[in-house]
Every structure is written in structure tokens, then in C-alpha cells.
Length: 217
Image (cartoon, rainbow, N blue to C red; front, side, top):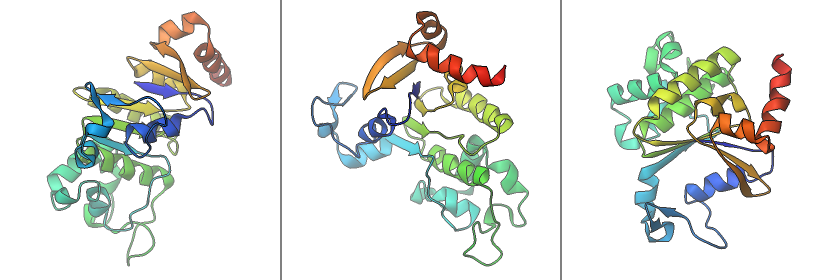
């Protein structure tokens, strides 16, 4: 599922509501028919995870920077590497002097100075490590070049099996991979459907698609 819309339309607010960080002023949010207010916070946190575009840089070893996503697995190298493969971080971590034991950032001695793209891959890997039922990715490819972005989206499509994935994006190319596209405007969902169907409707989504597509012609 992909959530799209212009700046300030309410995408981030909706994500925070789904994560249980905000509560609605009116109405209610349900999961499998259960009101969020009836779900224990610990249970909700275990079922939902996210990777934001403004993620935190954990300046630890590479393995620990991923492992903090699920502290009880911080010493589980197999689980951490599996998450890094899913998040696209394994390839560049294998090239580091100490592999997954390489410090990252600027604080620790001998630390590797990562690019914005590499930091973002670590953040996405942290989200995958949690193995949550609902995975929310907020602009997960904002720091990636077009080729890397295409690779990540192809991997997301394969990893979505068996779980709910909500991808928040300004780049509409990702919407072609989703089985459902939600268009947000003015704090409301104004369109809901598949990419091809929304193009035929000729509404908000179709106009956004056309505006972006013209830059590639």
C-alpha cells in the first residue's frame, strides 16, 4: 500500500496515529476490529514498526546500529545480517574494514564515515529486524540515487508477502508496485485504488503523476 500527497496534507500525522503516537480527536482507529485504545501499548509496539526519513544516526558498530531496532536481538548476528540484506545494507557493510564490527559515524575511533544513502539503509534494516506485522516506511529512498531506489523498491515488493507494508512517498514511481494507492489531500483520503485505475479516473493522483512524469520525457 502506498500513501501519497502533497506537503502538509497530513501523511506524517496519519503515520503517527497508526503507530499509536497520536490519538485522534474524533472517531477511532481499529486493528482487526479492535479499538487502538483497547490494545496494550507494548502489544502495539511489537506489531508495528517504521523507518522515517529523518532517522537517528546510532554511532555504534554497524551491527549494533541495526541491532538497536530490536535490543533482544542485538547479539544475534544472523538475524542482523538477514535484516541488513533486506534493507540493502549488507553489500557495503561487507566492504568495511571490520565488516559488521566496523564503528560508524564520527565518535568512535576508526569509525567509517557513511554517506546519507548508507545511513538510510541502516535505518531501513533496523525496521526489518523487528519483523513486525505492519511495516511503515516514510520516504525510505529519499537519500538514494535512482538506480538504488529501483533496487530497494523491487526488494520491498518481495518482502511485503505476509505482512502489511505502508509506503509513504512523494515519488509516485513506487505506487506502481502497490496493490493499493491512497491519496491524501487536506487531511482526508480523496482517492483510493490501484495505480492504473486512478490514472483512468483523471483526478488528483493522475495530475500528480503527470507533473512528475514530464521531467522524465
